[in-house]
Amino acid sequence: GNLISAGVFFFLSMNKIDKSIIGSLTWMCCAITTLAYYAMWAGVGVQYKTTDVTPRVIFWARYVDRFLTTPLLLCALSAFAKAELPVLISLLGADMIMMACLAMGALVFGPDKYFWWVGAVILFVIMVSQLLTILAKVEDEKRKEVMRTLIWLTIICGVAYIALWLLGSEGTAALGLSQEVGLTTIVDLISKAGVLFFLISNLDTSDESKPTGLTLA
Image (cartoon, rainbow, N blue to C red; front, side, top):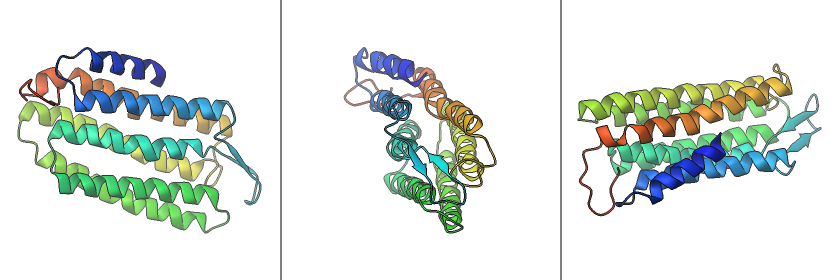
């Protein structure tokens, strides 16, 4: 799904007369996720952690993927909302540190890993506050409605990622491996391809920037 999305976004981006920041960010985001899934399928991005209470399969490539793609996704949303640079920097900082916390928690063993998870939750709350700040400052009503949907989809997917960490191999292993992989794949498709398709489909009606130079649309 992300491979197809990357191809579609790349085609749409390259066929615009006025090149788009958002268009470039969207295809790169889906392309990186595609490569991460191929790495995991090939066994390159997978680690068998035998030092935990029970042996766990850790897909470390998914953290590399999220560390690279979630900032691209958030930049695309911020560009659409015309967010202020200080808010964007704070948002990206919280996101990248949160992903680093989840990755560290996945690699350590014993109860200590849950301290990393708690840190990630705190940083996620900061992310949500920054996203809502960006939403509050959007002036155009049509753009604001689109942005509200995008932000809530992003927040819901973020909650799902954190919950899957806790219930999956990295945390309590309450979910079976196939269940964890299946649910994570669905969330990845929604948070990347789904959100970005919705964003791209609403650019023409919601973005009133002029088609000169480097534009958002």
